[in-house]
Length: 107
Length: 128
Image (tube, chains in turn yellow, green):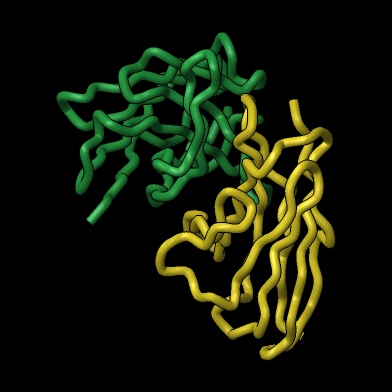
């Protein structure tokens, strides 16, 4: 199975900050990578697919980049509603695998 | 509006069985692959199983292979997960999720894509 490793696992930031989360795949996955946001007690929400394509309705402050094994999710100007846990997921091959999650907290 | 509503969760003893259902509405269910994803309390997301639109392709995580069976009834717009030989480590919220249309087809014909709609989840607790 392809292992997905996110960093950091958690960190604190302030509204207005620019933040970047990294996801690394244990082998090349082309651009078959998605990012999800999950808030406590809620289902995950798809933010980005194909590494850099913004899902409909997602604010443009979210962006994704990368291909092969290294990917990033950037939030350009943190808003209060962005404090949540973020997961990357590869859908290049079965079994699909998720990163362990990055918990973004308010500083 | 796309809706996915899971049901069937509950408390079951180790070794027991449970059948989860996911009722879909607001889209042409028979045109989409579907998935089950679970999340143990306080833990991350784990993909469990996928089924293609016509049930031609079915995949399982190694952790559930041989114990869980995914199925669907396109006439009833429903997705199922039959869970047998349940273990304590199967305790989790189980989500059904739709595979969106942005994915890709392998030479084998199977399809992979991210998950664009999720249900609210149903909690399965395996405990004596």
